[in-house]
Length: 405
Image (cartoon, rainbow, N blue to C red; front, side, top):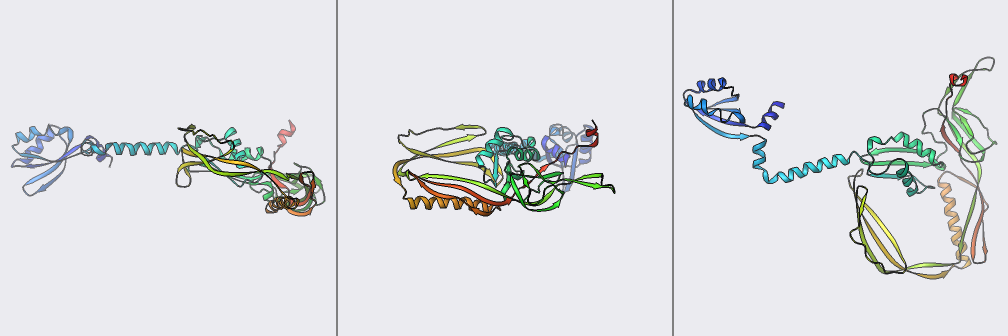
């Protein structure tokens, strides 16, 4: 196969030879180091192949042996390019496109975040791009395991996080503290610690050594289940210590302080039919806006929607465009009745409580009161809850040698 590729690159030709003294012709070619292969007999003539560099040299043996030599067809890269010269720009363009796509596949061009609740997607994304990974970072420079540990340290509410690279996209999936009983993602030696001040109401240990019991008051960061398991001898002295990933289900009693207020009088936006749109184009880390219309509206909202070019669901490219629309509106003074205000405040309170329940929080007492004061509707009070309070945290193993030093 390799030999054929080399012959194709340098070029070769197929000839037919006809005459009485064909054997003498082959002998003369051999003496002149002319390589002949693929000889076939066809009726009164024979066909064979020679390299392109021997096409002139073969004429001398043909003349001396008095044979009739005819070139049937020429092969090779040179002939192909000459025959398809009109298609060369297309072939070159396709090759360049393939090379560009391959080069772009080496980088991260999109960061996708899912599972956030208390934190906003923009907040997490901004922190990641500023401190760890930004668009245009080589995939080989991204350590997903280290990124998981750093984000878990940077955001206290994150209980579990997974980072992975799919195509040119960095996927970050997280679960915040209240969504799980205990983060069991760690497989290395770890403790289960409290995520907030509370009173322990229920505790089931599945791995490790329990440090607290039901009824104990604990502070944020206190160890609830230790990853150290001690083995004692008959004298109740520590014989050996094993370290595991502590696991368990721990519930705690705590309170949420709830504060909310709203004015009875407010301004609402009434949008007109007037709007102006323009586009911004981006490539790599550069943006280009060819035209920005003059905005003469006194009041307007700006709405933008970005579109990134991608192949499939995970192969994103460093090209994008953004549509930006400015919508005109007029501020109109309006007001709620006391009944309407109280109803809206109750709705907002119920949305807050429902959000807690969806995270696994059990509501025990709702002590929030809604009152009217001057031109304000105020909701204030506490919500007593029972909720998951344990999260895994890696423990530092201190060896005996270190202790002795």
